[in-house]
Amino acid sequence: MSTIYFLSKPASRLGLKHCLSCLLLLAGSSALLAKTEPAKPAAAEAAPAFASRQAALSALPPLMLWVGERPDDVRAWISGSARQATLKGGADNQPAPSIQEQRMGIAVLDTTILLRDGSASVRRRQQPLQLPPAWYAQNRVQQKAPLVTIVHIDMARGARKPQLNEKQKKIIVNAVIAAAARSPSQVVQLDFEVMHSQKPFLADVVKRSRDALPANVALSITALASWCVGDAWLADLPADEVVPIAFRMSGDAGRMRDVLNHEGRFPRPECQPSLGLSLDEQPWPNKLRSQRLYLFNRNAWSGTPMAGWAVRLGAIFP
Image (tube, rainbow, N blue to C red; front, side, top):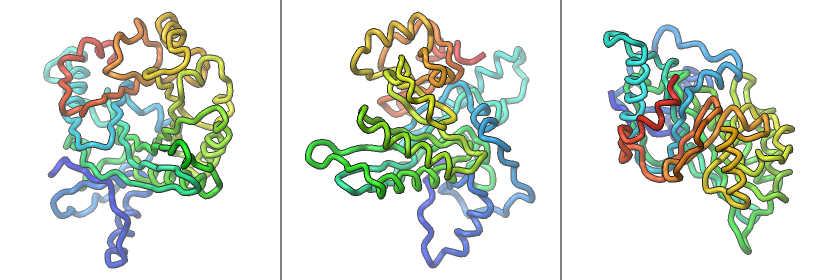
């Protein structure tokens, strides 16, 4: 079986019957399709979905790799984390961790939206990503695999800055709903950086997205570090996870780094369970108290040997 997946393309009219059958099998959760050999017969019984969004979110591993829009291969990193978990179990002959026991997962850029003037252009992922074979079943990524789909928002600047109108808002919400249907983990992440004056627009997008998503699908959002150091507006958003971006920080970056070095997390309660760091910004905080770390890599994961980071990341794997 091939381990290269491509996000599914919109159904053509000629293949509508076949695509509808696929959608029924996916049940709105695991529609990340693999470019593989001809499909085998479907299993008699599909794995049950997470009953709640809290269960889906808590099932994510403690380390999540952000994967951008480039050809990439995360198999070495995922298998390396599985080996670490097995060795820490104390026996060489222990079975490899199940897909729900993985110590590392990925958050994949699924959709990019460019807001410009009064319009919004939507671009789906085009680049292949190689995943561990164990993540597949019936030629598709398994339901409950630790793979989060991301919707990233870009905004034009200058004369073509976006109007942030109702049409753009609806397009973003629809993209979040669609990306959630392609997420085998039942977690979708919205990556949308806004200025202070644009916060009401983002807040309404988050609220509408949460209202439109199924009750058992979790909504994760990224957040500027400054939003987590005294700005309480995030507390009113119905996001299930807030991931502070603790790299490429602007403004009072020195003070925010001091907070992380002393406390191991940001003071706002909604920003404490998760944290986003980057491989290329060192040193990291001396202690990390967040339960989940999202890791950014400016380069491809396939070109970044895990061996060089094993010791630094070791503390993440309990």
